[in-house]
Length: 191
Image 1 (cartoon, helix red, strand yellow):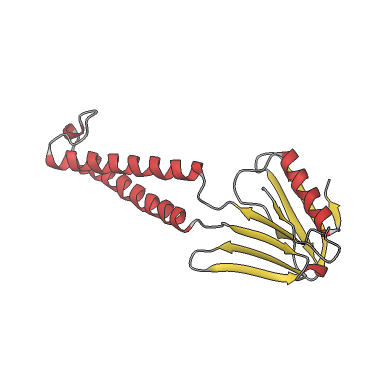
Image 2 (cartoon, rainbow, N blue to C red):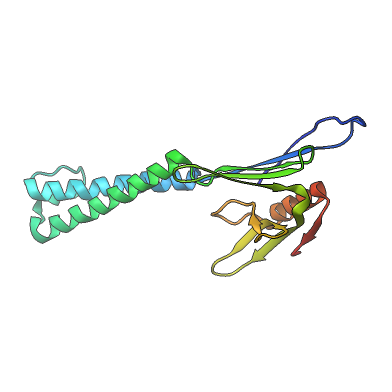
């Protein structure tokens, strides 16, 4: 989670008033590679099905034309269809870049704005900066690891600020939490 500090000068000319943190969405290299692999695999299954049905090898490897269409070719076609549906979903998610957005902390306006891209619309939450009680860093290792920075806000549940997916390195997580707590002038919890 990288943070970009933008400085604006006050009457005294020394205060930082705006912190904006971009949040990476679905459009990551690992998801792009997964979409490519699923697409290639599903096309392979469909070509195997068609080779079995037509009796001609449409693939450069193997001999799919010797497979019986019922049941082997038909099952390959069903696997191919399932793969095409999954690949279509992955490519749609990549096109939308689901989950991308930003965390914006504006001291001048006294507002926190959290925005993310949803399936069909932009999701945004805005609340007063004075309602932020603390910055919370959560670390849980094991089978389902959790490493996130969240805001403790008066009258609301904790609001997660980190991306979904791969856990952030511990040093980067601690640095992001400490930087945000220092900027907002609130306590850092969880370490």
